[in-house]
Length: 302
Image (tube, rainbow, N blue to C red; front, side):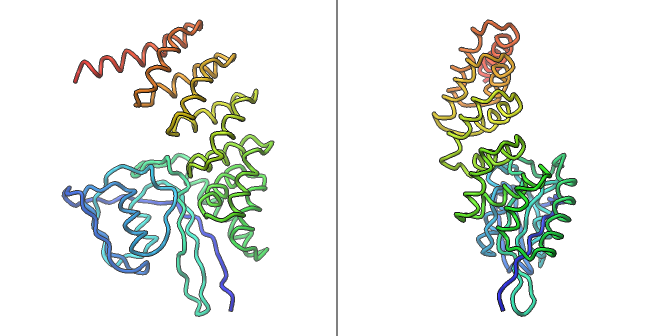
């Protein structure tokens, strides 16, 4: 009997933590019953240990660096996930075996920039809406996992598009990846930004060229969305795009760039702020000077 694939979206709920800090994590058992103990360990490291123990890939969690402490015994995988993170949506992909049992094959965190223990402002709405739509679509069409997700991408709801694109980007398949690339040049601003966010999150080689192309558009919302993603990327290519945006004819774009650069902590961002100080727009130069002053004061305190 062929395996059927069902896609569930869950919203992660409560964080628990009671153990003293010792920077250790221990995971035993299977996805049906896990024992997990963590003492002051980064969320991403706890999830990595769970992934290695269960054999279930957990994608999109590399930004979750907040330390947690917890202790769970004989707890199902999804319940473990719900107790580790708070308010962050994820897809749990299940496969049904011929004997009728369900097993989780992959998990994709939909808000990698989210924060464990703090509610993601749109997660409850996205979670409920996407779960209903995906379940109904699967029941009515019998589509496979990727076909269903591609259909969701081309639907009319931008929230569902963003979720589906995130999952497609992490599935490590040619079809899913091509679907994300196609959406990265879509006419819909929401679909395009969602696809670009997915490519930036997985650090795809195509991310920077596509983000650079978005910066050439006249739509400020699209350009500012691209800038936010570029500011999170490492490397000289991202820095060059930020520097180019400091010369954008639109002062709103230049100001947005300064604010994003000012939040970076790398040494190279100082040179960009120094360039922005010489901007003819008073608000831009003052903002850049404020960030530089804050860094100087921080150095003095050390």
